[in-house]
Structure formats: structure tokens, C-alpha cells
Length: 103
Length: 103
Image 1 (spheres, rainbow over the protein chains, first blue to last red):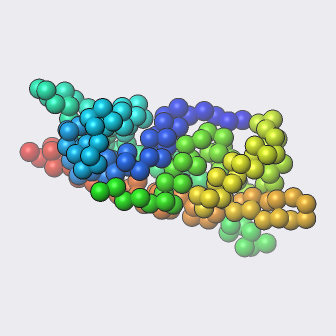
Image 2 (image 1 turned 60 degrees about the vertical axis):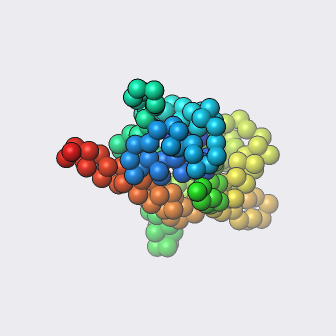
Image 3 (image 1 turned 90 degrees about the horizontal axis):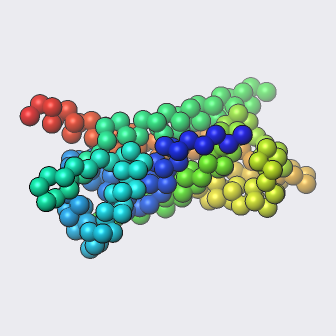
């Protein structure tokens, strides 16, 4: 019955962490390095690299090595898959709700 | 820096589990009892109650005791908050992407 959707699973797991959501918000305004991303939280680079790795696995963020730094950016249309999934559920639920009202 | 949004946090945590997503899909087609929800997974009622409790805490599902059974239903517009948040991020990221293209 359960259809495992690895991409959606990874995306929701990545999004369930408040620091990672904040990183995504900051990256939505433009690319940032790991060092820039870590700074405001007083977090180690290793800690931030782990968060970025989770976001990369979920295909929400890509990184690129530029000289000695690693630049992170949000994947365009990163949330399209899960947005479509959520919208479909909301739509179904509204149809059920309306049908109930008509009974 | 990190703005903790407890409702969004709970919603994403609830959605990070494949069984809970499947339960939401099934509830989007109409109300079901805990027993009906548990059956296809060969899961104990206690196990399903735990999943439903996580979904209730996230304000995605409500339950109602009807006689000796507990009926679960999807909250209408349950995903509106996180859908708006995701759409905003996608929109920002697309503006950044377009601006890059123009440089």
C-alpha cells in the first residue's frame, strides 16, 4: 500500500529541521558559501556541511567548489514535486468537504 | 536568526514519514477509523494511534470518538501554511535565477 517516494521522503526530512529551513530561506535570496551560512548560528563548518549534505541529498541545494570555498545555491523549482503533492491532497480534501455539505 | 515556527516544524516532521503520508492520502478521499487505517499495513492499533497523534499535533488530522471507534479526517486546508512558505521560496529563487541570467 505504502508507495515509497525516496525524493519526497528526503525533501520532507530535510525540511523538518528549523536550521535547514532557515538556510533555504537565506539561499532563496542568492548563493552563499558554507562559511557565510554557518556564521549567524555560531555553528562549526562541519555542522553546516552536514546540513548542506542533507539538503543536497534531497535535491534542494547544489554546491560548487570555487577556489577554496564551496558555494551553495537553491535548486530552481526545488519544491515543485512536494508542492504538487500537497496541492493534490488539499484539493481532494476540499472535494470531500463540499460533498459532505451537500448531503 | 532562526525563527522557530512550531506549526510548520511539526507539519514537516509529520510529513517526513512515508506511512503518515500514505494515511493523509487515504484520508484525503474521506474519513476512516483507526482500525480501517491500520489494516492495510498489518499494523497494531497502538502503532496507528501514535501516527495519528503526530498528525493531530501537526494540525493535519482531527479525530472524533463515535461510539467505540475513533474516526479520523483530514483538516481542510491543512497544507496551506507550508504550501505558502514553499511557494514563496520557489518564487524568490526564480527571481534570483532570472536576475543571474540578465547579468
